[in-house]
Image (cartoon, rainbow, N blue to C red):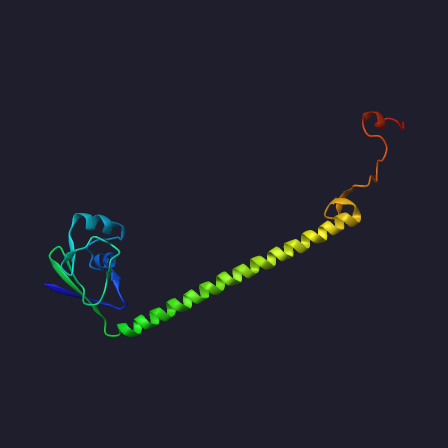
Length: 153
């Protein structure tokens, strides 16, 4: 008995066919199924689970014959799917470009900020960003250490 499989895309993979016909329950089983059981594609043994099956291909699995055919409105659906794929690709490209621009702007802003803090440190004679202890002495210019702590008693 020959079973007609209608598809609404340009092709389906052998794994998809096996799953749709409930021969296997998950895609991971396809590899092992194809190692153990012969599958014929147009009369020749096929063991590649990702093999693309197109319109008019004949597949034999466990004595059952399957013929791939396009659904009635498949041409429209294929064109719509290709347009959607192109739109997603353009959106992804735009996202990558926008991310690159954001990264460049962030790098420029960081450089400006670092330059500003370096200028403040130079101007105020401080060590970190315009805040903190001065490098020029300031408070406590006298001797340091335990002996100087008790000198003013």
